Amino acid sequence: MKKTVQKAVIVGGGIGGLAAALALTRQGIEVQLLEQAAHIGEIGAGIQLGPNAFAALDALGVGEVARGRAVFTDHIIMMDAIDAQEVVRIETGEAFRRCFGGPYAVIHRADIHLSILEAVQENPLIQFRTSTHVQDVHIGDKGVDVVDTAGNVYKADAVIGCDGVKSVVREQTIGGTHRVTGHVVYRAVVERANMPEDLRVNAPMLWAGPRCHLVHYPLRGGQQYNLVVTFHSREQEEWGVRDGSKEEVLSYFAGIHPRPRQMLDRPTSWRRWATADREPVESWGEGRATLLGDAAHPMTQYMAQGACMALEDAVTLGEAVARCGGDFAAAFRLYESVRIPRTARVVWSTREMGRIYHAQGVERLVRNQLWKGKPQQHFYTALEWLYGWRRENCLADA
Image (cartoon, helix red, strand yellow):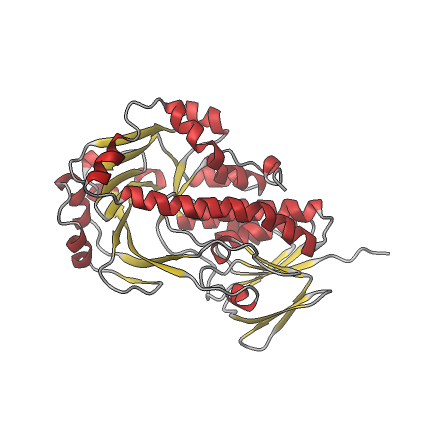
């Protein structure tokens, strides 16, 4: 008798959704991927990938492709935006790779998305539909029904919500509200010729200022530079993305040193994000439903771990399904039991890093002395909990 192939519906075609699709098909599960946008793709500019992200990409079989599109950095640098003095420099070369088993890199968001999408498109177990807006999810003892706004019903054995901060799957299962942080992020890409020569550094370079900061790093072989600026808004913000204005950016960075401030004149256009996260919760689903990535644990950008956590989620989900022999309800609870505390730690650590970056007055002075004279091994030991993640140990705490 032919064994029935299990099916899962994944809602959302971003980095997390595509990665989850690959992870499930590696267990022989068919995947229907539903994306509300007309085209599967990514908006934004650059992202940072730690060794934990590369461990996940390797586990999904796309690590080498992603490496071919990434820029491997020499350092991670933090500068004081007031006096332009270096605060901390973490080496990310050979010793870093030996310690964590992988590199630190920066990559255009579209390039990492494409690296996973290409594998999805070649996978016969994955079908995806664009222009499909899910509005309802029904979870039964033996399966799930996912309903879109056109009335189409997608029947499957399980559903995974990978549909972002405003997740419909989350709303239909565990609910809860997102937390608007009041921090606004502007992102832009600057061509190399327009980047100040003294700032063409092969590293994520963060300029920490009072209630604000800037980050820049190379993309696409150094032909472009990603520029990200963040500030505490004076306005009452609502989560969302829209075009930004140089005038608004300049109004928040009047007091910083000319060296970082010169970058603010370089972009020809900006995109403006009003950021949000969520308070960690004890459950991401029920029965045959769970969440992944920003739908489960949206976080701000201060530790550059949003995409990395989604990739870890996807691999862990696949491993949990394998361990539970295809019992989705058991696998999802196993997955949640290890991912909820880990991602909660990242969410809370990210908030704290935002406070440290944006310190002012005496707190700024204390921050600038925190890491003075520390050996590199000090930083590596402090980062082991984050960068030491591997597929082989992802269920170790279950």
